[in-house]
Length: 124
Image (cartoon, rainbow, N blue to C red; front, top):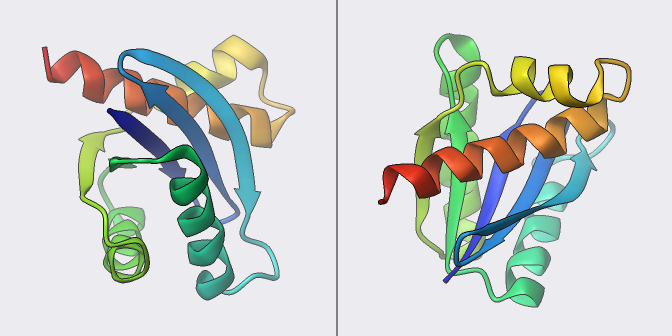
C-alpha cells in the first residue's frame, strides 16, 4: 500500500510518502497566494503519480483542527481516496529539533513523515 502523509498548515502543507513501511519526505506545497482548489489539484496529481491508496493527515486541537477537517472534506471530494486522521501532537516541534527551525518547509515535510510514521506504528 502507498500512503500520502500530510502536515496541514496555514502557510504550507508538508508531504511524505510511505510504500509499505518505508517513509520518505516529499517536500511541501505553499499555500500562500493559492486557493484551496489549486492545492487540492496538486495533491490529486501527487496521488495519481504515486498510486496513493490512503491519505493520512495530522490533526491537533483548537482552531486549526476545524480548519483541517474542512480542508479534508474538500480534499475527499477531489481525490476520492480514504482520508484518515492521526494525532500530530508535537510533530512540528520534533521536526524542528531534527532539522532546525529556520527552514520551515523542511520542518513541514519532516513533520508529515513523523505523522505517517505514527500512523503506521498504530496499525501494528
